[in-house]
Amino acid sequence: MDATEISFGMVILLQISIGLAVNIHLLLFYICLVSIKHRLSSSDLILTHLALANVINLLTRGVPDILSLWGLRNFLDDVGCKILIYFHRVARGLSICTTCFLSIFQAITISPGTSRWSRVKAKLPKCVIPCFLSFWVLSLLIDVSALIYIIGPQNITVIEYSFMLTYCSSVSISEETTLLNTAIISLRDLFFMWLMSVASGYMVFVLHRHHRQVRHLHGPGHSPKAMPEVRAAKTVIALVTLYILLYGRDTITLSFLINMKENSPLVLNRNIIISFTFSTVSPFLMIFSDRRVKMFWKRDS
Image 1 (cartoon, rainbow, N blue to C red):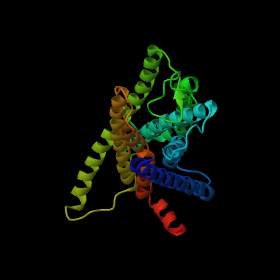
Image 2 (cartoon, rainbow, N blue to C red):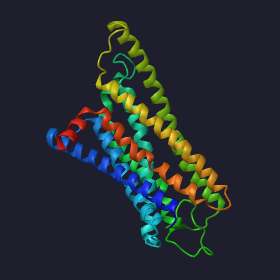
Image 3 (tube, rainbow, N blue to C red):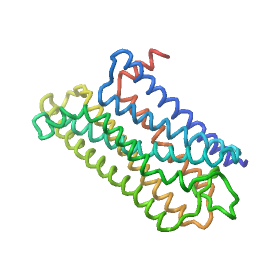
């Protein structure tokens, strides 16, 4: 290993460690809430599900990448590669679905009580668990192709290596099948990103109108404390913005890698770091927007 690989290995190890620690801390916090309240609010359930998706993503992709960057090769067989890559892609699907659902849920929550969303707002909490189940079914079905063409590391003269991994391989499949699989995943991602963008745009409109009303009531010299719903909406907008920016950056990088004649280790390592950024940063946004979590953290420390 040269100095560059060691540096990337250290950065990714730090990133994965921090991401796992913070997401697991969030999960433990919500478990403690269940023991106290015997149930979680709808928004807490959604954030718990997002933290769980982050943990699965970091474990199934982050740990093997760390082992690979630190020089360990051929540590997975066919079954291990299929399971890890499959659940990594499932976790990625759960992440975008849950982030989208969170943005829609928060947009409806902060909508005026006299609006057309008032009836939906009353029924929305009952839809949380069914939505989670549908996200799991959708992700498990869409990404099932990974169980077919992902295998353990093989001889490069027989198998075309995946440009994203160094510890697993992919069976050479037809261009039509690859195109169909890519189109299905891309359509899912674009659809949910469009939904979360619309929901975030609506929240920005509602928050802007709320800010103008508050400023009119309290005067320009006063800065009233933001309501929990407003703080939560701002956090969701930040999460959606982060996800869209990182997804766009990841898409550009993957397109660049596909068209390269030879894989660039530098570009590959940078793409690995970017791919874990949302799972690592998003729990910090949840913590800093929720005073309960900060108080829990301070009490434990």
